[in-house]
Image (cartoon, rainbow, N blue to C red; front, top):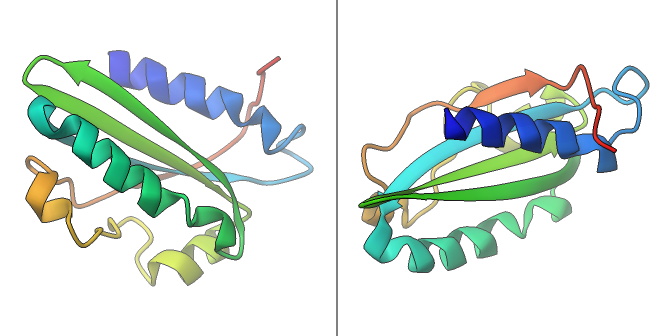
Length: 127
């Protein structure tokens, strides 16, 4: 439930990316992963460095990283915003539902998820 709420809040906050979703279509690409809490700080730094490159990718409109400690595991979510699905294809390849794995992910991630979700931003009510 908490992860769904964090995702909803992050999607709503996309207002800084598009003031009118009908005028500026945005696709929000959501990834989720979990790591042992003992290694969460290390993964946080690694993930931050990796996603800091997003603005240099053509079609990227920004990104957010969320973190939720949950006892022995810590959940991470990354939501990246794209001008179109074609822009995501240029970044992620033919199947945009597949995770684009980072080189050290196998070292950190617990039960890595094979897929991401690509959402059309249809309401942006952030103030």
